[in-house]
Amino acid sequence: MRPESWPRTAHSLPAIEPEWGRTKLALPKGRGTRALREARFLLCGLSLLATGACRRPPSAPTSIRIESQIAPQPVRVGAATITISLTGSGGRPLTQARISVEGDMAHPGMSPIFAESKEMAPGRYQAILDLTMAGDWIVLLHVKTAEGKALEREIDLPGVRPD
Image (tube, rainbow, N blue to C red; front, side, top):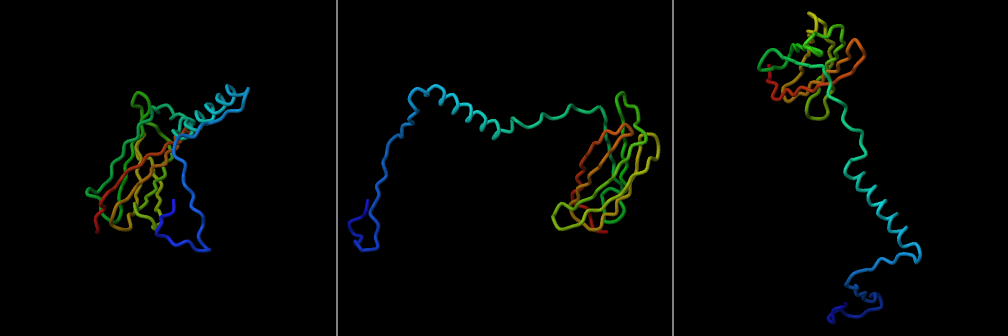
């Protein structure tokens, strides 16, 4: 609706008043049941996609246990020794695994650093990661067992102190 105080000019457009009330959905005659069923199916499919129900279910929990320790404590800039223990079912050590270590700063713009681990004893591995600056770090362990099973673990290193 146009307020009466507005001047009417050649450039003004006619006022359009909105219609208030409910809009009725008209289904085609003779196909009402089928069209309604198709609409329900479409809405159901869209809701499943929106909730993530079509994602692959999480994998079954693995029987491999990964434990890690970092020295020195508190963690400082420079060499950090990461000791990793791998055990399988029944607590038996997992030997001949390959563990790659990746260190990333928590803030963007920094290049990651990498190290390879060495097996020091059955199921016990060590890697030395050279932390280049103070701040929050995230360490990723990329594990590949002798049987070819791939696992990843994340270790947070908040507040790495300056040297």
